Image (tube, rainbow, N blue to C red; front, side):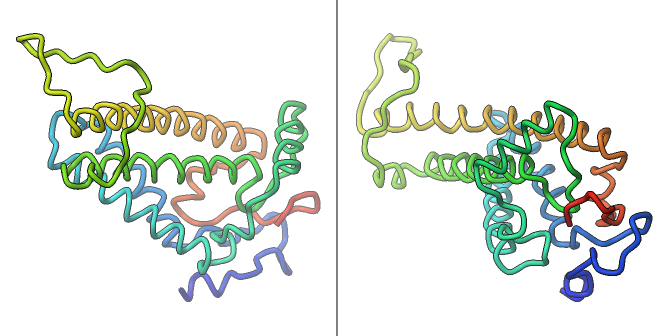
Length: 222
């Protein structure tokens, strides 16, 4: 907490060439912990179910923490600091296509939109996975329409299509679709980080390890 408070306003009295603390320790632990937990969940799906479930609960816990920290955390961790409206986000994306986007000390509008997409997708993935763990939890849901037609593969060609089957089949499809979407979003996120690092001549991945970034210049948004 001291770390967060001591760097509340790094843009004040800071030379552009100096380093400033942007990402507090809890944001960094959240970020890399989430990378590890999601990767573990993805690699153990349908193979090591106990490990998969632990990784899923870890993801859910980290997302819950980030939602709270986005309200009460350090300056650049707060949603109020970096979330922008659709107009500003689209304008930033337009500037990106023309190679003239401004540098943001915290999350830029495109990065902020990606964070929202990641948190929503992760929440949905964790929730549907939690429902699938216990038959009693499935009873809380109404029948969910299948994304694709379910194909039962019983040896005898029969399947008991009861209440559990009606829900679990489509719900599993939703869970897997969200997990695949999360993988796509993660790839886009990494691509955005690489592009921004190249455009603004700074290593954003390293900044998420050290917490420090280059101080804001005259044209930067702090």
